[in-house]
Length: 335
Length: 186
Image 1 (tube, chains in turn green, cyan):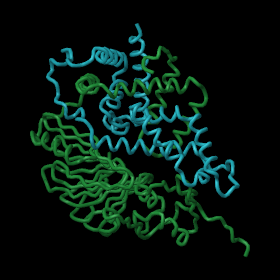
Image 2 (cartoon, one colour):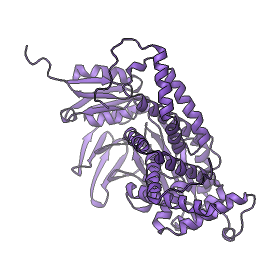
Image 3 (cartoon, rainbow over the protein chains, first blue to last red):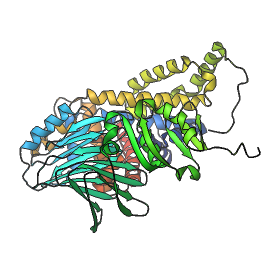
Image 4 (cartoon, rainbow over the protein chains, first blue to last red):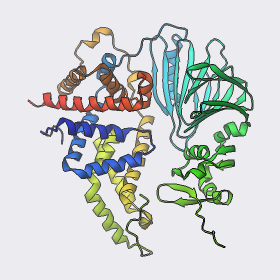
């Protein structure tokens, strides 16, 4: 198979490369659609799959380059921005080691000689993980969530790129701890709080201490929240609002039950989907307008789904690979 | 997917019929299935192994009549197997690039010992192919294919959209593929 003496025209190669990067994109949503479209493309022409395999073969060879070769390519084409000298110092190297050993789900850790520390953590659907960061702060990462950590230039910055995380921040006035999430930044002052991202909103629920939530790119817009308060950011309307919360609501998910108080059904479903083995889909705008109060046990999502029609005017259709919730048909119109 | 497909009016499906169906699916899609898995896993050997596993699972289905699109179902099984395999790999991964000490500066020009000449030549080709590309394109590609970052993370570093990052990676991939090949052939 290797070195097949074949050439492909530039356009076809580009198409095959395009599918290659598409199929590998782990942003799960719609991946089944992509697979289907790819299969259609493959079926279109015999040459398509051959070109794809040709790219595939190259992709595999890239993966077998040894560490020194990889390092040199990175140095030449993607050198890290040189971080300035700072306080974190030699501790960073040791900390990186601890992360690499202790965090077996660490995707990537990186510590430079001058102490910049970077790491990315991710979980799969249905899995929570506890992480201890280099500064001693503790994080529980919810299902299907991703957290990027960057300690540099005297700042402790983490970005919640997807899902939900509960933070217990080690107190250190000198080095602020910041969580970025979908349009806002949460700055703590020695605290425990939960950050949850769903499609159109970010919820910051404080269980201890105090946080300041700032709108990214608009430092004038901030909102402070203390224990049992919750800040809600609506990414569509760009509204920040303050409400109340309970410890259960903020972090019940850490003990496998998701607590909701008057939350939009789409937000509830997005959270449930981080624990469900089958994706749950909402169909129709009328369902999106509903709000839900109650508890979902992550080990009995099916039971919860079965019970939903008792609470809402909807029907549940379960297929081999998805659960669809749709508005109940007005079947009893004439009675 | 929700449009009505061929409806099984029989209550039970004869196992032999299901097996025949799987056999046909195999003939039609096995090559694509292996390619799909190789793309996800970056390893043909692993891809072949997981394809095997996916077929076994298809055969072992208890209620094949409930599946409206066997092809979609097959690729879904395969996708899940790939995710599991990638996760397992993370657990017992060889030292990542970040744990390899930064080489001293002179090392950049020195020949790298203990490497097959062919692999070294290939690496040289890759390097010169990358030099022909715009800086952004080669950077995105190296971060993705060599450093192993995902599109979103690179988007964040490079201050681009994830879509643009994927575009750059795609272009670089096609270009390098063509170049390395070209020089490989005497």
